[in-house]
Image (cartoon, rainbow, N blue to C red; front, side):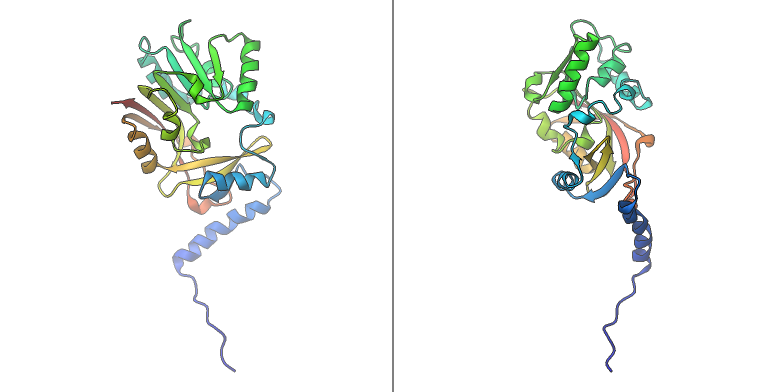
Length: 264
């Protein structure tokens, strides 16, 4: 009787990969929810996968208040941002806080910065977050805080602040910045999720929703920003915000970093 087709045994590298990947895949079946699950090539693929599992994306009234109080406090990774904003005092009066949630950084920073009555702090975010932010700011009497749903309505600004923006942004940053009437002179980006390999999009569980979370290739990210004429002034690492995708540990950990760019 003829022998059946032979199967090549996996090599040492393949076996190591399988041993690392298998426990992660089993997390999909766990009754305990993962913070990060799935690995997708694009934001659109991740959003489609999330839509099949309940609330998808950040634009939901149900999750606007998630971790709000915590985000209103200064964290260790905020201090480089505060340092550079203080360096600009006297020069800056118009700031766009992109992805600024319900004005959490304004609330955290206002007693630590020389924010005067002629400061204009504009938060750009998704409609559900903007609605909640306006109501909360009105209730708290924060007249110096403005919200817009369209970046085009933010107007011109000397500073573009994106703290925790990039991992949730569905387009390259350059696409977003081109929607402004002119390029801000200062660009401060914090908590940017990066990796050495190709960009990977996972799903982060936030409250009852699953939100696409991008771990961007750093070289591609830097080229995109520098294509608009920005030069890198400073970069800092945030080790405590490094993350591994629970279901795909073989992809390795992301690095969280902050950047200050100046228009040349």
